[in-house]
Length: 603
Image 1 (cartoon, rainbow, N blue to C red):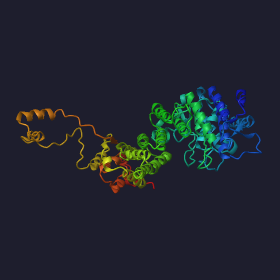
Image 2: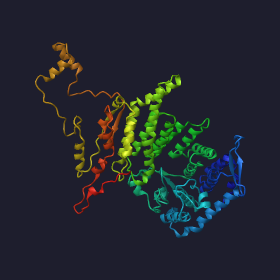
Image 3: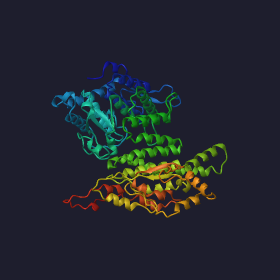
Image 4: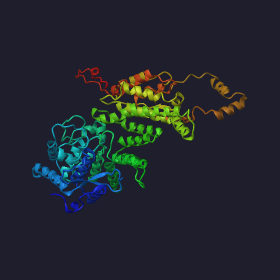
């Protein structure tokens, strides 16, 4: 079955507005044709980003200038003709329907079975070329599949869903984490199935569930807080996948405008309410080229974070990364550091696995490139404006000095590294190495000792482990330092033995110049009784609560007047102590040597 007559009437699609009208009509249907929309976007992207040479001898392909563009250098947009798109659509649907016999598969209660979903993924998988670069750009659409037999990882998952829609399997939908895609099916989408690869390897896990990844608490599967897409959210995923890059330094302005208008169409319909990353992408586009009368990028980013908290248990990282990027571009140092710290606080509850390398790269770049560069530029701005005069220069110097003299900025930096260290604890793969430590010391040294001492650091002991894990108490005792001794509930703090007259002597010293009854009255009024002590005064500066063992061990080093770089590097690159705490004693019949299983340091 080909395109419907209502769909055909919208062709040819001329300019950006023609494509937007097609999407609007499909979204209003309730069951948008994923194959049709993907073919249209792929066609447009191919001739605007992959092959920008205006074709002369290609039938059915012509370019038209966009309305309102500069006459000196007009922007051209390919006109999408019905004949070409209808032929590609027919080829895709006939290929799927000819390869899958629905009568051969059991479908309880009209729901799809795992065997049927696996068969559809086999059809897509076997139609791909055997050797091509899987991470290359512009191979995410069905246009790339039909014309070039190439798809990237997420493109395969989307193609499986589009193929299932062509077969009439309405219960199969796309599931998305922040770096992976698979499908859900069955009643209420309770079943999951891998249909594509992830990362650089081509491990074939098709047909398997994702429950193991959820149980491992890896970021790749978001501990189960992933997007369960509706059809309109799958359209939003398709729009977010538009790649406007022509090369490493140039983007297609036409594709950026198309993506922006399509995202606003979805936003106005409420289809992005449960899609935080799409909201972040829209905010970035608005920050680049704002549309008058629309919501501000900051308000959209706040909505993305609210969506992650409301629908996904605040388990998503990229909403905070989008927010930090916005503040970074606008030179707002404190807010950027705060957003990165929030991202690290979310990250601390995950375990790091090799498949989480994408988010590792994000945090690595932030810690070892972006933050050091930001603080360096801030310090340079403060120094360079000292020799110049003028209102603008003084304003720049004031902003730069306020960032480096702001204890809140230093507190955000500590929270960021505490989240990274906590992420490493208990993970099978180490995170931190000497490269991290070098830039940590560099970033810490940007703040004066007096600024660092204004931040109050408190530590929280880890939750008690099982009774058979005796090593945790020994480690805690070994980490204790001289003057800092925390008492346990069952062990009252040590007190010096009272001598007769010692307490009145202390009172006499504290209130000099008063006589007997006056001293007694003053002591009663000014000094609380031991039975009802007054609460300690609130710290004057920001308070940071450390959760990771490595940052707890650096508490005194961070507040020192002079940075001890060697001690900080040694502490940060040490093996995670919680890993040793969580090791269970080997059973009596197990003769494996635990010290031979020590984690390798990544270089």
